[in-house]
Amino acid sequence: MENKSKVRVRFAPSPTGYLHLGSARTALFNWLYARYTNGKLILRIEDTDKERSKKEFLDEILEDLKWLGMDWDEGPFFQSKRLDIYKEKAELILKKKLAYKEGNAIIYKVEKGKVIKINDLVHGEIEFNTDEIKDQVLIKSDGSPVYNFACVVDDDSMGITHIIRGDDHISNTPKQIMFYEALGLKAPFFAHMPLMMGKDGSKLSKRHGCVAVFEYKEQGFLPEALMNYFLLLGWTPKDGKEIVKLKDAARKFDIKDIGSVQARFDMDKLRWINAEYIKNEPSKMLFALLKERFKKAGYVKDTVKEDYALKIIELYKTRAKTLEEFIPLTECFFRDDYKVDEKAYKKYFTDAESKRNLEVLNKRLKAMKEFKAKTLEDTCRVVAEELGIKAAKLIHPTRIAISGSTKGAGLFEMMELLGKEKVIKRLEKILK
Ligand code: GLU
Image (cartoon, rainbow, N blue to C red; front, side, top):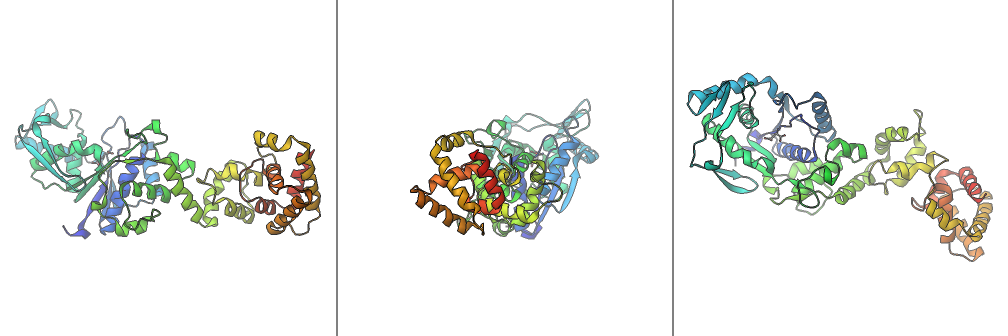
């Protein structure tokens, strides 16, 4: 193929909405290919739709791209600042008599009966017959270009060698090829990636859940996890390892590896990947990410006891699948008025027997000098034995007493972290 180091790809969002998961995935594959080939990634903002383009969307898109770890080499270039160039190029086509005017609009005249071929790098050869394509507006009467035309002018003048974009643009490609021909230009390579669909196989939309990248950020997905998931949706690593860091993927990724079948967005798989990233993230880094959430939940103030928080994170990072899940899971470590699971409470605290058992345990705990997980476990086992009951009969109600829930980290680690004073206080409160 052509000289790899000359590869120039682009990501061309329209600021008419928030960055969608599908667009983030397109950005990722362009980024990977640019990095893999040591080429360049150009960012172009397709903002010719004055009505629908909004500054707030643009800002959010740029912020989200940065958050996702996508960096670009040139741009952002704005189409709205290049209107003269499109006009000039359209007039060139007009001069060649390949287009006509209708008022101020310039319209490309489609020659019927021709076959246009795309050699798509993902799908192979795709043919279109121009009989099915009607005449194409190049410049609207208000002077603004249509997407297909501006896209061709820009891809050419920005030296784009490969267009990697979603399958939803396949029907635009024959039109764009006609414009390349009309301008006497060579078309770049095209690679149309299969779209990411919803779980039911239909187009991914709000019905399937959140579709905007910022919503995943809010829910506490890590950008690396999101990108890793998108990567797996279009590409199967040869070694079968599913956790792939972006920089490693960038060393291996080639366009020809993009699968040609549609991928389905699977929230459970994404959550699994996110959990893997959380688990492997140093606790200090997680703390930096969690600090704002802890503050918002009222768990910590500006002066945070970092050591304590780090221990809590250490205990829960193997359990929380998103950053947001740390909040309910860790509530009992930060507040005394944590929520109590009513059902579980009723289940374990209706009979007098469990209260009596807990009273025995409580007495023993009070006498303990060293309040460590290991010694706590031993004490609990001994008390259970003396009472002639299974340890579980002490463990479940104790866990409810100190945390309000039957779920959570290992009970003895939790007790150690909470400390003797709090554990006893909580046991006594529930026994009352
Ligand atoms: N602005 C177009 C979009 O957001 C870009 C299409 C393309 O990559 O050519 O879908």
